[in-house]
Every structure is written in C-alpha cells, then in structure tokens.
Image (cartoon, rainbow, N blue to C red; front, side):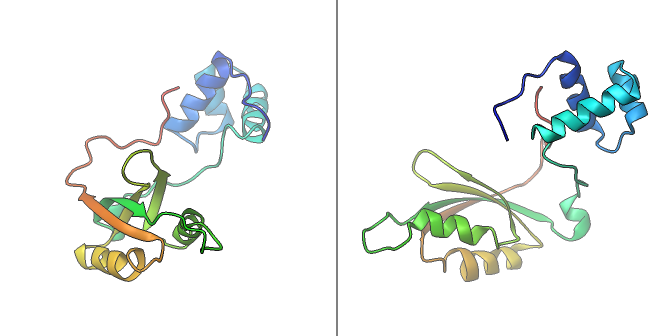
Length: 160
C-alpha cells in the first residue's frame, strides 16, 4: 500500500454506504451516491486497490453462535532481558495469532502492555483459556479481566 489516498466527498459517501451495507449492488450504491453504476464500480475498485477497503465480512452475533461471554483482558508482559533470543513482545504477538478466543489485541501505553478482547462460550471456557493458554505463556507476567455486562454501542463503522 502506498501513501494514504486523497478521498473526496463522493469517496466518503461510497465508504459510508458500504459500511452500512457491504452487500449493496453497484446499482444500489450508485443511486445512494449520485453516480452511474460504472463510475461507482471504478471508485470502489480504486478504494480496494488503495487498501482503503480492507475486505468484506459477515458480522455475527456472538451469543447466537454459542459465544455468550466477552471479556477484556489487560496483559502485562515480563520485561525484556539479554538472555532471550526473542523479545517477550515478539513471542506474545506471534502466539496470540493462534488463539481463536482473542478477536482483538491492541498494544497499549501505560501500566499494561496489551488489551485483549476475548469471546468465549461461558466462564468455564474463559477459565480454561486464561489458565491453560494465557497465563502459561512464558512472556505473560500478569493479567486483569473485565467482563462485558451489556453492549451499549457496538459498531464496525468508522466515523467518516
């Protein structure tokens, strides 16, 4: 991907429409953004090629597929020492890619190093994940968990 492309008002309208309905046809998009279908297609292709549109997905409701518990886990890693061939952060980053329960991971400033969003079936599943996977990772020093009681707002749409 190159530098961030310049987005005009029509690009932003196309992106807002796709965020609302990624399955919209080019005819439907065209009518929403006041362009022809072919011009809309060209815009979408350009936005995809520029990496502005990263992909298309079906968004699932976790509780409808048996994943009723969401937790946010703050993780603190051990500090790097000269005896390690690989830094604790590199080892942790590599490991979380294979942990399906972790649906999002962000590196943080402050006291903790990472924030994980974890989706599991129930408390027993959460306990197994933390005890058998997360805390057994050699880079993990400590973790603190907050459980989601209610989703007040949940969106994938960016405020463009």
